[in-house]
Length: 92
Image (cartoon, rainbow, N blue to C red; front, top):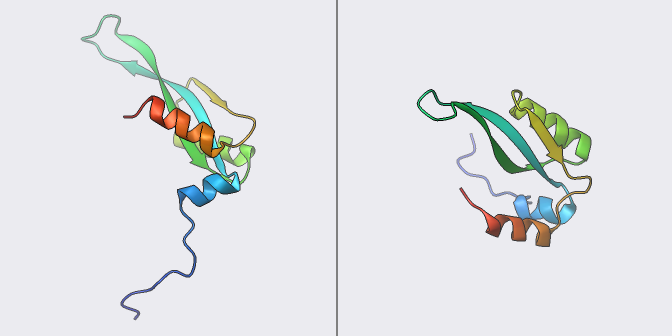
């Protein structure tokens, strides 16, 4: 058994971003809180997925968020400038 291994290639998020494999999507999910007024509503989530094309990104999004009410995905993958400006806008 090998105790440790050193990777020959590291393909991190920045690599995917530079390769055009990061897709930005927005979705709406329902929430319910019986103590709140009104008790029902929606919240918007922005997330980024790694996929080689838009169709696979859409499939992954629907798989991750099967109960979503509304989902939009950009026609083009994210650019670094686009990602940085959106990331700095809001963080959880």
